[in-house]
Image (cartoon, rainbow, N blue to C red; front, side, top):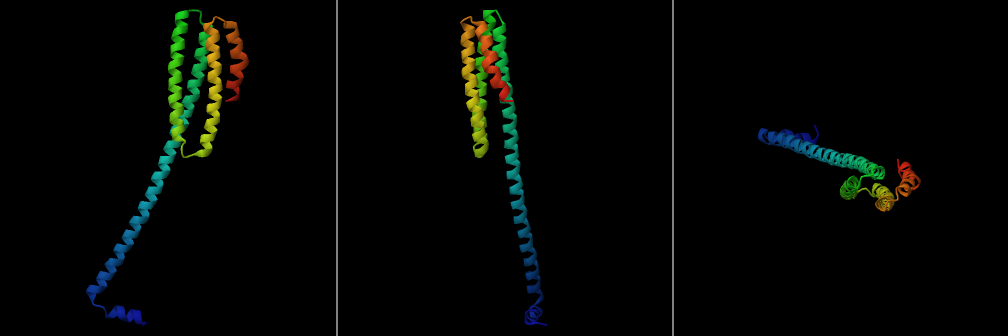
Length: 165
């Protein structure tokens, strides 16, 4: 026997039990710490995934809202009743407010993801162009220039919508 084994064998039973249980407790605490760190990592991954899925859903809703706005403008062009046009104009304004809120929430969700945020800013720039064109169309409709509004929709807005798909 080497010296460390001789020393251990000379210890009384109480000390040996204390050392054995101490080793078991230390191993248990190490297992708990490693498990806690693993669970924390999984929890962070789940939070990131949940955030990504929420942003994906909101981007889909944003695209749907923009398509709905386009449809409302086209419906406004087709309708001849001024009351219905006013109703459609109010609905367009309300939906624009919803789109703006959605854009703000998406930007907040992308705060930690710089590459995705810069891509979204490109989308936002395109949305500004679409919005300015929509305002021009609405002005044409209000002034009674329906043929010009149709031409504007066909020649200006449609190519923008078709390229963003």
